[in-house]
Each structure stands twice: as C-alpha cells, then as structure tokens.
Length: 373
Ligand SMILES: *Cc1c(COP(=O)(O)O)cnc(C)c1O
Image (cartoon, rainbow, N blue to C red; front, side, top):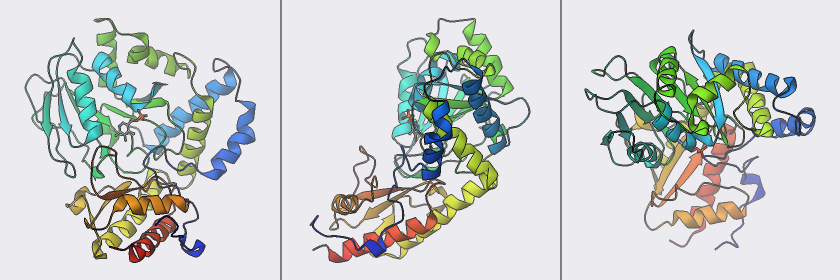
C-alpha cells in the first residue's frame, strides 16, 4: 500500500497541513537565519530584544484593530498554561464554560481542578457542534474556545446575554487568532499561542486584556497567593516593559514578529481571513461533492475556515490515506488523537496556499481511487 507513489505533478508546493505546530513561511525562517541571528543568543533584558517584543505587541494591536484601553500581555508556557493562569489570575470564584471538544473541555477541567474555585458551570455538546456558556447568576467569568481545533468547529465570539455585566469573557483563541475575523471588544481576555495562524513556534502565550480584565488581575493579585509563573499581574508588569518574567524563546518571538508584519503589510486580518476562507471553500466543496467524504461538521455555518475535518466512508481507511500522503511529504493531516474518527484534519492557516489545498484534495482522490476498497 505505501509503495503507492503519488505523482510529483499532483503534489502541493508545500506539504505542511498541520493544525499546530503549523507551516512557517520559508521567508520568515530565512530572515531568522540572516537578520535574526544578530538577536539569537543575546539578552532579553537589553534594547534589541525588548524592541522585538515591542514590535510584536504593537503589531498585534494593529492586526486585531484593538480598541482603546486594550493591551497585549505575554508569558511563557503556551496556551494550555494560560488555562491555569485564568484559574489563578482571572476567575474570582466561579466560571461558566462552553465545551465542544478536547481543548475547550480541558480548559473547563483545569478550572474544575483548582481547589480555590467553585465547580464551574459547564454546557457541553457533542464534537462537531458548538455551545456557548450559559448565563448563571454567580459566574464571574465566561469561557470557551473561538475555534475548537480538535473538531474543526468555530464558535461565535460575543458577550453572553443575561450574564452579570461585571463578568469577564475569556476566549481561547489559539487556533483562530490571525485567521478569523471577530470583534475584540466582545471579549475581555483573548489568548493564543503563535504556532497556528501566527506562523511561529510554540512555547509562549499572548493575551489581549480589556481594562476590566486588568482591573480583575490587579484585584486577584492583591487577594490570593499566585505562583509567579501563573500571575497575570507579573506578566502584565513585565509586558509593559517589553520583557517577560523569565527567558523567552527569542527565535519564536522573531518568527512571530515576521508573521504579524507580513499579515499587516498584506491587508491585516481581512487578508488573512479571506485567504483561510478561500482554502476552506475549496476543501468543503470538494468534500461535499465527493462520494467518499463528508465534512464532519454538519452545520455549514460552524465549519472552521482554519481547521477542516473530513470524514471518510467506513470502508475507506483514512489512516491509510494519511500514511500514503505522509510518505509523499504531505504531513499532519491525521485526525485529532482522541476524536477517534475515520477522518482527515487539514490545517488551513493563512500561511497555507489555497492552491495547495486544491492539490491536497487531488492527491487524496488519486490515493482513494487506487485503494482496494
Ligand atoms: C493548540 C491549542 C491549545 C494548546 O496550545 P499549546 O500552546 O500547545 O499549549 C489550546 N487551545 C486551543 C484552542 C488550541 O488550538
């Protein structure tokens, strides 16, 4: 089976379709090797790296058209670490979550495990759909994921009707940030890591904070013990100086700055979102017309423009397709580990050329035609 060799003429120009870590532009890597090599191995407390952090922060403010008073904070540990940051530095007593896949569920579980908090309210729905948190009278924080990377479903981002107006909206935007348009002023905290749409490596988290979020952070910092690494107050204070609590990965920051600049120079979030939508239209219309496949997310309005999940008829083994693609250099289209479906998952972040998504579809067709089903 794996001796099956996809003709070179069908192959995409770049075979990286992962949902994170995801394709990094070769131009950014080349820039890292030339310009970036002057920063690598130098102090993050000195002006050159501090200036890099400043450009990341102001570039993100531009990219997301951040409203007045919002600010960008960053720290080490990646997006999953931010779930613990939220448990310590954002939630006063009780949160309300919408869970519709692995990432939004893990966020709620992290909070549920925190001994200093009450059990969160959790609204859940089966994988492939979306549910927002329910308004509950004692909730001081509302949380969900903008894009559920494990299932390929995208949720709306807006304030929850019937919630306490003082409650914060905290959104895990990790796989959406930089690829899906939304209004930042509908959130108080929008956090993400840069290894998905933002074309960099993992290991850091970034978060937009509203004025109300900053107030909350100050309140809790003076009120409870918080480990330094999970203290949003510490991260905030350092970020205002364009530094981090401890040493960041300078290469990650450099690649992030390259990507943010590339997106802003080409038209910002509108450009990025359109590029992802072009890829998504190609993938979903192919999957709808193909007798072998169906889009996993049944409701077209919930289908993610950045992470596409495609089910195969049971007699066509998706894992074998993924293995054949991998042998040809097309990588990371395997489905999310725990979803357990006969499926392929395709990362369509802004760095992915829509033409390459079309080529991927052709390659899949080529493989399926030659499988002995
Ligand atoms: C990838 C992802 C995470 C985890 O990010 P890490 O940086 O690996 O911790 C969290 N939430 C969502 C929605 C993601 O897509």
